[in-house]
Length: 80
Ligand SMILES: [Zn+2]
Image (cartoon, rainbow, N blue to C red; front, side, top):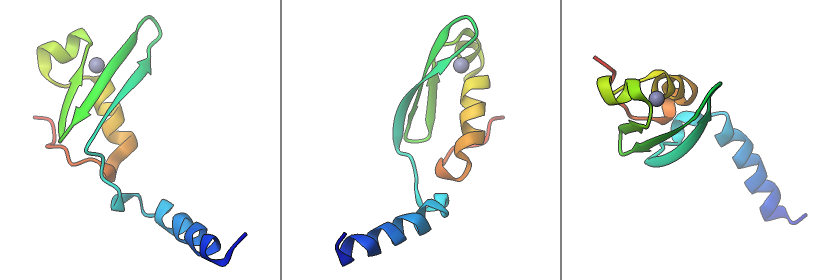
């Protein structure tokens, strides 16, 4: 392996321990539910989920779970 690549791998290891350097702008994700799957989207700080609860409340267990998983990697206004 060349010298340049070794340096990059070292840097990658360091960055991987500093997740708050990374910020998701958008993504879509499939949640495997016990009964149904759900489609969750995140776009510039806004959530979208296809579950019934989200349609009523604008937040749901799926979006809240992802907020916990991704913690510092999202800029999301806290739910009211
Ligand atoms: Zn949901």
